[in-house]
Length: 235
Length: 391
Image (cartoon, rainbow over all chains, first blue to last red; front, top):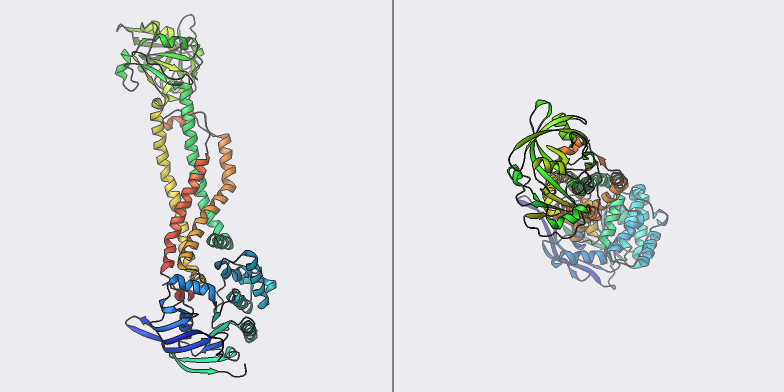
């Protein structure tokens, strides 16, 4: 773990319980974790282990049932909707398994979207979008629509969209699940480059071995608990 | 400014779907503006027609005269007031004497109002020149409706009976010297126009009249003993009320059209929210607040009006301009069915107030209709939306 850059995420006794009729499902059970700035870490584990739930809480898309999650100095459980939206728009980028590109927008417009929310001036916005497209090697597809892209290209657009505002934290939920091996490695290399180049913290949820080959910290979740937290040396 | 920008982007990006909605809504636009413009034109035309043929700039009525009470007519005559005579001599006022009578066309009995008018008058759009007295019979002018009802035609001689000022019944032959085509039924149906001086003589009402029609620009009315001035506002009030009634009837059509168009917008919005829930979740994940998502969807709905206005302008402007310049033709029979006088052609009037007022009204309704389904978003959890579920 990188200890010298400062903690940007801290969870304390984090619990998330989903009611299911008269019963309930415990998705996260007493999760205590910290993440430092610049980490390239993965939450691994089988389906239903609580990976996505933890990412959603850290991304302020959901609130814990009990315990605490502190992200970039904000306490998620106490964050009003507007403040949560502000946290996401300014500091957090998301990458989804199914890319979630806005279908009627071009590649350029998709990448530009987060910057429009920040009300960035047009010239700076244009430069940032073109830079982001260059990071993901898609400058030549700026005018394409998502439907005209391959899965790998779509996910690269999603990465560009997540990092274009240079967020401190990128949360990637199964980013390679819909990609073949070649594309998976390519986008992971891209994300590693951005992580190293911009110092962006990446946190993945995955059960894909290809991702595990790239991450520098692997947290294994089983039934909502942290079963193992290991740093992978040499990466 | 981000919401309008995104909304425009989304609407244009949606392509054919947007334009299909716009096309449906534009039809409602064009029909509403078209029919409203038609009634506005109607209003203007009817007023113009009745002013030209009957009302002039207003009328002086002899005290007891009430056109809706036939019992008043027998006494509704008096000497033309001296202050009006210079205007009459100058052709800026026309006295009309009204006497009750009976026609006997082909042995039938037909009640009629005998109206005396100066054959030389030019103030009213009435072919009074055919009433210039001949050698033998009294010349008479009737309208085409009266001709149809009585079976009379030009050149026919018919017996007319009346009661004079002294209460004596008398009868005489009159010669139909003209049948006028007029869209104003109120100078036609049940009426026979005779030369004023002849009628005065027949009724023993020398220098008398029942009404005096003034020229449209006669200025303020004089106060005359025994006479009451009836302004155009008064004379046209029934017509205006009738047109208003017809306009209200047309409003039902607008309501149905608008309802159908709004149903399309409402459905599209509902479907759009359902289909785009993952997109909504993605936007929320990127930091768009629920309020802004609702605003975005509502604005998109409202934009339907703007696109509809553009689509409507494409075919509506040429179509309505053509109708405004060429007008609608009506036969006398058709115009009778309206219950008031209209010209041979109606020229619709599409005022800026009508076009912009209708656009604004449709925009307001569309926006409100778009807002209703968009409220669902307020209850939507981002995590559910991202999974494509509705909370």
